[in-house]
Image (cartoon, rainbow, N blue to C red; front, side, top):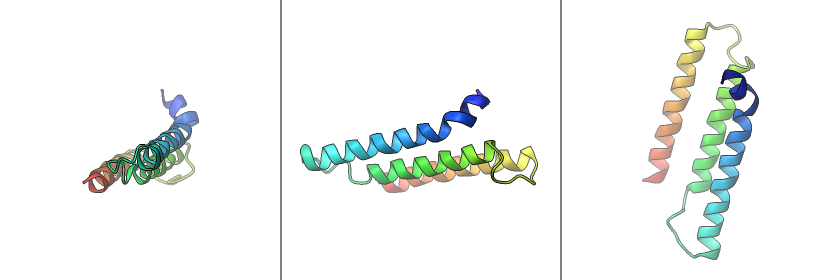
Length: 90
C-alpha cells in the first residue's frame, strides 16, 4: 500500500481537485445553485495536502529526520487539511 501511495497519491489529489472544480462550475454556472461556493478551494487544499504527504513519503522533504517526525508531520498535515475543510465549508 505504501508503494501505491508513493506513486499515485499526487494523481489522486489532482483528480479530486479537478472533480471538485468541475462540480462547483457545474453547480454555479449551469444549474445556478450556490451551495458549492468553496468546493474548488477545498479540492485545492486537499491536493496540496496529499502532494506534501507524497513528498514526505518519497523522501523529498524532511530527509534528515526520523520516521517518527515524518509520521508526526503527516498527521499534522491531515489535521490541518481537515480543519481547512471545516472552516471553508461553514
